[in-house]
Length: 248
Image 1 (spheres, helix red, strand yellow):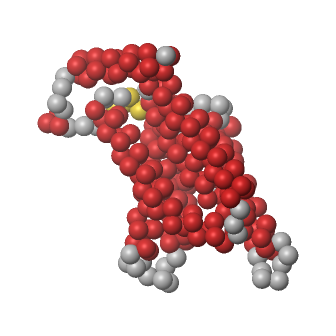
Image 2 (tube, rainbow, N blue to C red):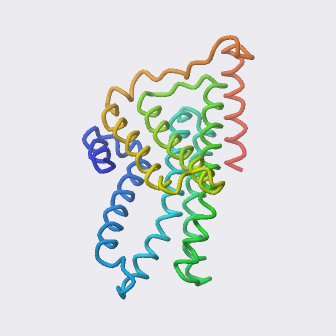
């Protein structure tokens, strides 16, 4: 389904507008196919290439997490693309995430250790990583609601897929660590099923029309603490401050 979504992005000529999403779909599909082939060919104790399979599996862990963060950051940059300072801040986040991934791979090569040790390390860290992505998703929603930012239909779809996937991954891993998840129900399989359902929905709903007529997220009037003019002015002031900071 990731490949189908990737092809749909190309056909709609939206791959350049959503580069992080496009890269995530391409890399995710490529790694998925590669891991399947390697598991069929080499995932056995007798195989001399078993370590290669394990190292690729290890490398896929931080790659997925960083790319998922980049996609969520890209949603943010698209929402605030009219505001240069805020938009630039999102780009800084993505470059920082990419640099962090490079440092992680460098650390794995320099520090050494077996792939089994690194797999155990990433298994422990995954809960914190996906919890952080979930928090970032919530903050993004609150930011959009507070400043009444217009969000297109396609951006809502992308955000829904990755925010829900990250949140479900965090919850499933927490439940598994606390012993609340039945051993017979694999957490990885459950997460994969949830992700597949939402990606299938995204493939069906993602469209050229979804780029037009963005609308603010609905927020009841009783929860609004300021007028629309005050909120807009606050966003402009924040953008100007960030622009000055990032230029200095």
